[in-house]
Length: 433
Image (cartoon, rainbow, N blue to C red):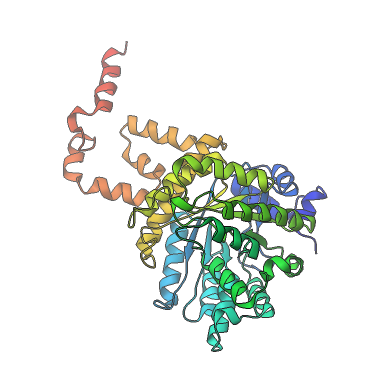
């Protein structure tokens, strides 16, 4: 069976492309052309029977991903399923299951069954957890066990897999020589660095990249080439290790495309405000325009409890500069597992960042909602404002808290009877012929 990229190169618009284009509000032929050039992807595993194909990339509104998953300290399937429901209701386009605690196979299967949106994962976590369950250390994973973890996730229908193929012995040497405050903060990246050091061997996902391509191709899943050396603090941003890894990912992107396999690139991380745009431009240049999937980026390190806001600031700038896919950050980042309430806040903040960027990008229809809600505000049409709000229940709840006051004059309690809209609307009535 051919992949979506192979069909696209042959000029064939597939059913998946039609469905994805319809949801994205773009022409199927435009999507096909961008898939053929690697500038967009249709993210969908052939085995994800209840899943909807998701278009990501050039000309498409900025997508939002929500990370969920258990840890050893919280292994509840019910909690993760509730987070999945909350994320979907809040408008996430994709979910990543990052579970490392409890019955992770059951959790992944339950999350996939719970929703029809795009699902991603990091199969190296699977291999690590399976190895630990056998009474061995993570660094004792065999190459075959690493690839078996990937196959297990693909067989379950995961649409995109994060693989840290650019974490190499040379990149690690570069990082050590230059020096970093936080070294490697990617969990998968740290596993790989420890494995290479212990085994005095190259990263199997880099050394045996062709084996990875052979494994992935029949599923037509997307390779999300992970940023194992993403900066974990502002002081480490845009250093030689990060850029060296990005250079490698650009080479691997071309090798994947040569095999007809769709790719997106993962990016930082913690980045100072004045370096965000440069990071996007570097990725787009070095990785040939492949869709860029960024975590944040967070533009300051001092905001535990508010990092969904920190991330939204960086995400808006990143997406405005060309990032295609934003991974949310919740108020729990750097502190603990997120609650369902944190998941909701993270998705909303990231959707806000993406929407602000889509207006700058000129995504068709992006500003229409802003114009419509502005007209509703002028008319003091509260029901229409609720309908058009990013988070309608929250807007309605906030106003309802002062219902006895606002109902009296129709405005909000900021200006009340002195509402500028009321004054200007009254002027228009007074001056009408």
